[in-house]
Picture 1 (tube, rainbow, N blue to C red):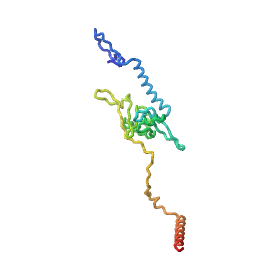
Picture 2 (picture 1 turned 90 degrees about the vertical axis):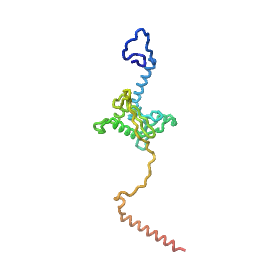
Picture 3 (picture 1 turned 135 degrees about the vertical axis):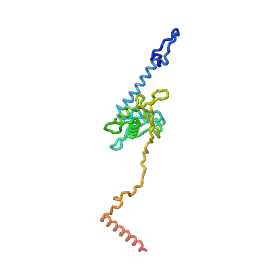
Picture 4 (picture 1 turned 60 degrees about the vertical axis):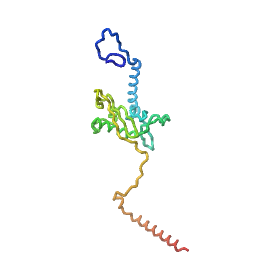
Length: 228
């Protein structure tokens, strides 16, 4: 068997007198450079989480292929955490995907539950992995679409692979139904469903003031009618 560099990984009987020599498919320098890039990408995923503490740092992307980075907005004394397409920070919103900002807590919970269910991880928090461990151990990439989340499980995770027709292991993809919550709250008319509040009697002092006001109003109305 010949690898990309033209080296034989399995010894084969030599062809006597052929004079043939396996030529490298790619140069050794290029092969080494690709391996370094792969190591660097893995390091980025680890360091992104270590620096920010955000569970999906280095793993989440929008559907235009942009990495989404952890950000927060402070309102009063409360911080709201999000993942946002990095192009927004560079004034390139037109290059962002269909969804360029998502609430961090909601996304992390949805993805964790989906992976845990798919891999049959026990949901009891006392004996199961934490949300961070579930995601960091099994998730390779998450892509956010306007109507779904597409999860790619790690290729080196044997529980996330299936054999194809040739017997080769292939990573699994999970599609999770999801849509970004509306930032505008729906206004509703509140009904009197609670009998304790709807049948509460008016206080005697308030009733007295109300009756006096009604009587005074009627008196003023009669005075207006009498005047020519």
